[in-house]
Length: 111
Length: 111
Image (cartoon, rainbow over all chains, first blue to last red; front, side, top):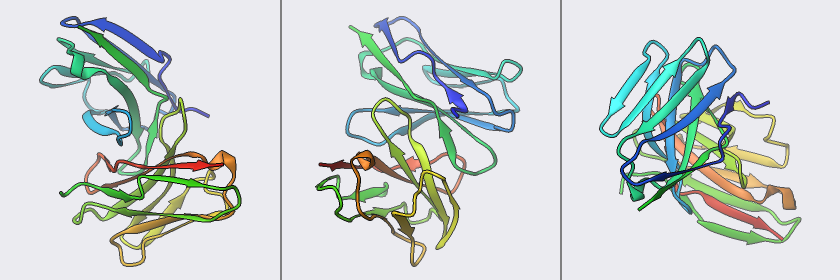
């Protein structure tokens, strides 16, 4: 069963606007959450992460929000740029063990 | 280049043949992971090593699959008697901290 879910397979956003990518999880034992970005023919690259003891982590244009009671996290990209167009994967982890990934959201930023 | 490397990048084989993939992790990383990604899905965990010890295997790793990391450095993933359902991107990753660094992947096509 899918422990990490990304229910939006795709998202299109105008350049300069905010992109919001959502992720839900079912396993309350997850204590670390990550976002990866993937371009075609490349492996996923780490973007940003958040520990379960926090509710927000910011890195430049990227902010991740965690709502533990709702088992929900989101990635905000502001302002969105055409180079942000990629597939974004949400992932979750218990301890320093393997990652469970969602199915991904394809973001297209329209110039 | 200090990233994770994988070889080959692409492999086309006929059903029933054996294939072997290689992964060279980042040298100071003691953990190495294998994932599989099929179209429209996120990466799915197959197995991981801490140094040379294989510590966990997913139920996705059937008995036709075997992974080794003989000296705690590079790793190989072998698939015996390949089936069309084995067609996927095989990703290797390594880490020392919480986030995984992925290689570019090996795309396997089984005809």
